[in-house]
Image (cartoon, rainbow, N blue to C red; front, side):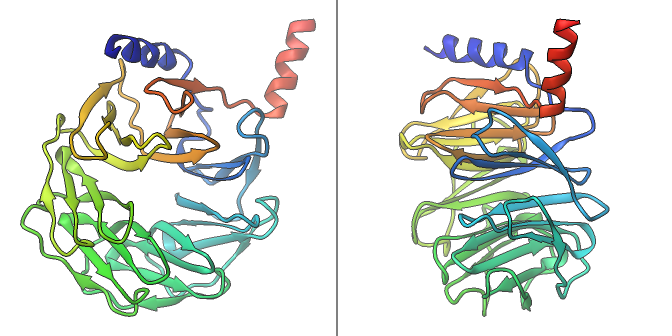
Length: 316
């Protein structure tokens, strides 16, 4: 079985490439609407679950770092220099939102109308009105924060450089620093299945696990020393972690992990749920999980213009 999985991933690599003008930085989905964020400032939009794509230019300069898509078609993109962009029409048009920050912004997460943005220098911003206005929350660390996650409007966590871990039980009005001796390297992502059980992953193959809402953390054995970049569960209950060389997968609820290696380094950085499967995004393209199985394949990212050009070339 493992050989079949690896073969599928090797074959997937053959078609794994996005446009050189768009290095994929992040992704988000809601129903059949999927967004892929280009680091250079563009956005690829699919309204049919990835069957076709169109590219939208964004009214901002500098590196774009994170995207969030809400069920009603509202969405947000954050990036360098305190950039926050907002759409209310599914990504067709964008406006810039004024926020009390000039730092680089790295992550964004919403629960209902409550949203949080994390960034460099310990920055956390909060919105209670669906992202129209934002206020700065006081944090106890000066380190850059790379990921932020809430399970409801009150309980959230943020992680970042030098093993920084923050937790809140009041929506971020107060953030508690967690000084864990096992968090010795910078952390890239945090994810909680419920109020108590969560994971944080990062540099050096680091996998941290908590059973008490993030008050204490333990190290889980990791099969790699790569940079771990995101964590997600599929609908079959498997846990996946993206790495610079492929995936880690757990089939026992995130208790033990094994390495599923790609033939070439692809630097996967983000996973999202689209329909009944997961997508894994890296700067050069997208892999799609095959119907909640252990197999993945590449997703062709062709815009309408590219498809039309191919058809014209084929008939000429």
